[in-house]
Amino acid sequence: MKTVITSANKSLLNFAELKSYSGLFKYLSLRDVSVRYKQTKVGFAWSIIRPIINILIFGFLSILVDKSQSPTDKFLMVSAGIIFWQLLSTAISEVSNSLTANANILTKVYLPKIILPLSSLLVCVVDFLISFVIFLIMFIIFKGLPAWQIIFLPLVLLYGLVFCFGIGLLFATASVKFRDVKFILPFIVQILFYASPVFLSTEFILKLNMPEFLKIIYQLNPFVFMLNAFKYCIYGNFDYFNPLYFVVSLVITFLVLFVSIKYFLNFEKSFADYI
Image (cartoon, rainbow, N blue to C red):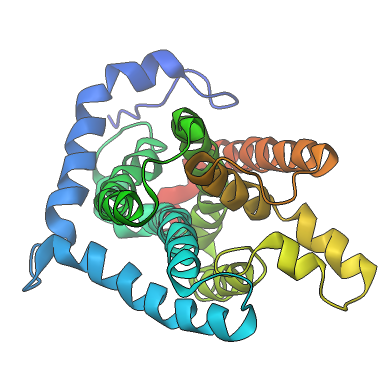
């Protein structure tokens, strides 16, 4: 007789069940961190090399486009945008690949499947912390101590990770059945990179001679607020804060999270049929 083990409630997240699997969550998180650069020559140095290359490329590009700041200030500003964007984009990528990358686990044992995308976030945070410590040392050398608003940094990081988890979970769930999704996502992330204030400020972009509806669409992008909030934590001044778009950003973030979790829970019982 075949026994099928299922969760008690498939319509909502079962937090009690998730808590009982906390040991597995820790194991999967640490496993992802340990194997990420296991077979590479320079190991965790890649978490430094990648942002440095991007900082150099987009630092020089931003200087050519916007000459309103000194090269040092410009490179520091670009560095802040790059390392935070790397956290956001990597979180989306890792979460979106978490289910198909762990297909063997999904088909062999029972576990709350949402643990897999959740555990994939730790490696993104570790990479970010390495880059951020280096950036902070550079910032202190050239600019002194960051603003007191740095106390809000954990909230900004949490907010960014929640949004990226929602997007990643949506694509992770869809990619189980539709494998083409994993080819579409990098293209979308690349568009969002140029549509966000990663290496050019929001103030500079909004002053460009472009149609008003494009400026509205730009400000509706939740990444705009997140990146500006991250820079605010370091510099102490907010680049074009608009309360309306802040509220819209919050609504979009939690709407994406709600929809993605509902989609995941409704579809997870069929994962084994497609994996």
